[in-house]
Amino acid sequence: MRFRALRLTALLLALLLIAAGCSSKPKEAEKKPFGLGSWEGTTFVNEWFDLKLTVPEKSQILTKEQIAQVNGAGQDVLVEDGVLDEKDLEKLEGTTFYDFYVFNEDSTVSMSLGYEKMPSGMTASAYLASIKNQLKSLTSMQYEIGDTSKTELAGYTYHTLQASMYEGYVQQRYLVREQDGFAGFLILTYQNVKADEAEKLLENVTKP
Image 1 (cartoon, one colour):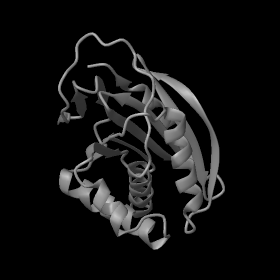
Image 2 (cartoon, rainbow, N blue to C red):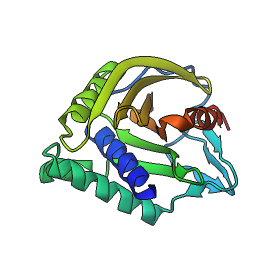
Image 3 (cartoon, helix red, strand yellow):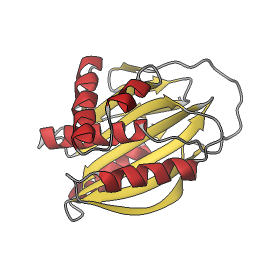
Image 4 (tube, rainbow, N blue to C red):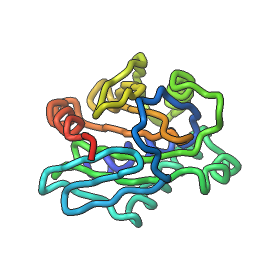
């Protein structure tokens, strides 16, 4: 089960890498230089992205090495399905950064955070439309794609896409906003019976 959860999260992150877009900005009090966040125990903070997350004590927090392994597995699946090729993979290098992957105790709920340097002139709706198209291209998965919407989270507006697979057994949510030319993306993946736990995890996203 943990392998399946890792694989699904890897696919989501890899898909986000090949999309492009941005969303509306809230008011900025002070512009900070780009930087990754860090964990102190079970609390993660990224001052640049203005985000804080506190997770339960028994959560599984992946290391940088584990994150790299998961990303590689997800990209392999996309290449096998013909969604990506080697040139696409080369374009991803140096433009995308991952801040965290975290799973609950039994790997039935996960959340990840990453950033991609975006070209100018794209909108959040175009970004999510690209994600939709990539999901539909995955022949090894049986996706059901929902509509896009907007979510207010920790004082920011995130552009959101809900998707599911395995006849709704696994739910996936993408939340995207723009920050200083980067697309910042949260990905929430969970079994449908763990929807309440997933919502509680998302509610733990606050400002630092």
